[in-house]
Image 1 (cartoon, rainbow, N blue to C red):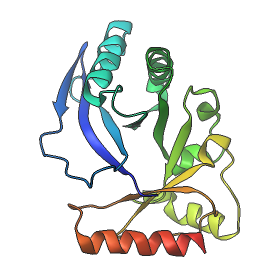
Image 2 (image 1 turned 120 degrees about the horizontal axis):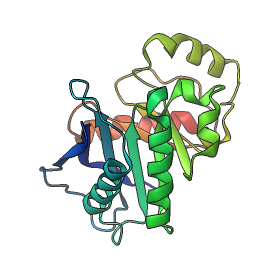
Image 3 (image 1 turned 45 degrees about the vertical axis):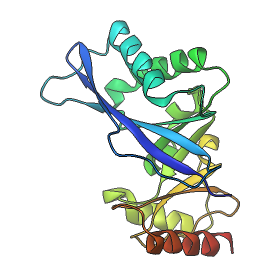
Image 4 (image 1 turned 90 degrees about the horizontal axis):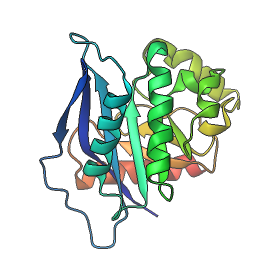
Length: 203
């Protein structure tokens, strides 16, 4: 089954407040397509966020407003949590889970989080999606581990995998839900490439 995960908006944590950039482009998909809204959360590095309870509540309210949970049963958050920010994100996810108890909540995850980083284990999420592209310095070691048949240490990371259509696909465990990302707008050619990757990954 093919579904579409789309960027619903971006929230920037800035000082003691937040700014919101909603999606402006129209999302056109075939009738009956399942849609999963994705919200990107970023920290302003010029005005570092205070990560307070009011700021957390503002962020949760913004996520609910951007994703329209009454329409989609799934929701994904994309963020880069520094160690100093992890408590904030843990509490944010707990509050969001309390607010939307029926939603399937997933997060994107750095591949390094899935190897020996215990902070994922206590997060109140249904799924953590290891992003196996644009991995930077960790890329070579992650690819080598996967090539040996080693799975991710974190159980949270064993349901799905994120790949890019413009990068070589690493060896991945079978039976995972695939999220396929394109650096540019999707086209028929991009879609055919994605289907080819999905087929090869299932073999």
